[in-house]
Image 1 (cartoon, rainbow over the protein chains, first blue to last red):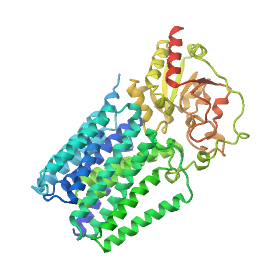
Image 2: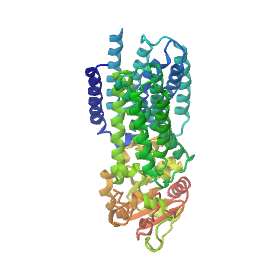
Image 3: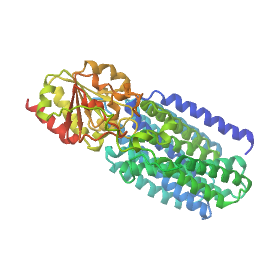
Image 4: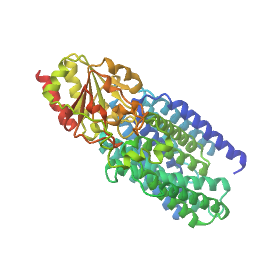
Length: 94
Length: 460
């Protein structure tokens, strides 16, 4: 990868950090736990990398590691979204 | 095809951003979580169409196993167990990054461009620390590992040594990109580092630890994105990283301590000594009260503030607390809740428990919104909270919690403190609040005590 495209990735990273700060600064304390478990589910985005690792054609050590990664990431994604939804269902205004 | 995939990744990123934005208000939060999960679904489906994905059996097997475990955990866990659940899920996220980094190394080795190499080393380091660190946090919250502050000689120099070892191995890997032993050393040492970094952190500092690990799991996803040159990983990971850092800082501010102080296992002296010096501690008699007397005191009150703490979670007393609130309201008493930012074991812990018990979130007030109201409140009921209501934090410069923002419950006309025993709180210091002229101790398990009090009030 050339330097320019690597720098573009850094750009994206830095800007996304700023977006994250802007979005989250104003979250009320009541929602801190769902925010944490909801953002935790988003960190399961590693599933994308895990799928690419596990889906290689030939079966190697790399594929096995990918399989473990898929399992871990799916626990994170499915568990994270479900548990967040369970919590948010309770935050109803009466 | 590649362009189509990239565009879908962009759309997924937008869903994540809107999802997090909507998580910021109770009215839209559930929709926000839905948005974010749609983003995730899009990212997963489009990745399956990637030309590099040629076989599907392992993906399907792994996906099904992971989904089943994740769904079981999410649907079985009790609300009081939420901190350890969040810790555990965090760990799996970090672990996934670790394994993707390992897998990528074996796939592309021995020809590794330097920037990819750096990203692999960082993913291994952060992913591993998140993985074992979160498992230890889970163990501490679940009671499998001691919740106390753990201290041993040369703790910090040793951790620093491990970090230097990882970095040196990383640099060496850049010179010898095909050396798998180095990669295993980096991963192995980082896994140990994760254990050692979280082990010293005491139970009451868990809100900071959990938020910080949450942030790490996002940064690990980002570094994995740098390995794969994939923008959606970088963006999603950065959003999570930023959110975790903000929560971490809010928690640190709630204790008036620096992040370093918490991470290095602070409150060191108080936590490790065998209780406070008996000659220096607050003195006097405590006045104890039973449910019947307390009901009579409450009957003539017009305003009540309830201050819940970790003790409420341990006793699973949130439903009894709500019953108490309803009984008081039935007598025309104004009831509000005051929530300290670090009450419980994770950010927002008390809010979730009270939401589970159907307490309207409009009745829950943050420290800065309610602290001036204690002086014109008739009765404050403290349930299982200790250090966050200790007046020593305001005036006693020798106290380890000096300077920590506290709820000024002692300014109320009467303070009722529900505790099981007179044992000091986490910081290992006596609480002069218990000896105050306007303080009444109401001993007993929070759930039983609130149940008795509620029936006494109804009998009036």
